[in-house]
Image 1 (tube, rainbow, N blue to C red):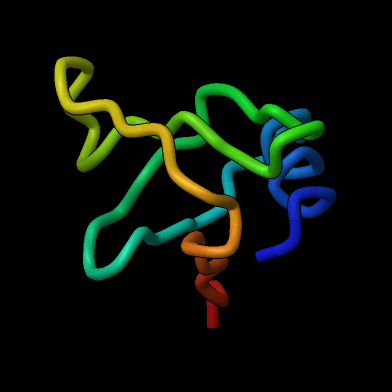
Image 2: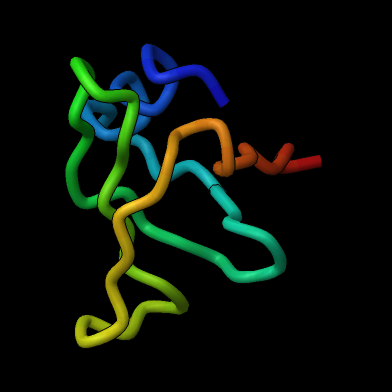
Length: 62
């Protein structure tokens, strides 16, 4: 996903489904200047990763 979209999701009051590879993630922070996002993997607060926003995929709710 584009960095701008990751930032929109991060700032949204709605919950959006986002995946990193096959794992569900929660966006905890977005570094717009570097195109990176810190995510929590599978609702596990001790499993966080900082990855390129390009690796994140928004999942349709349909």
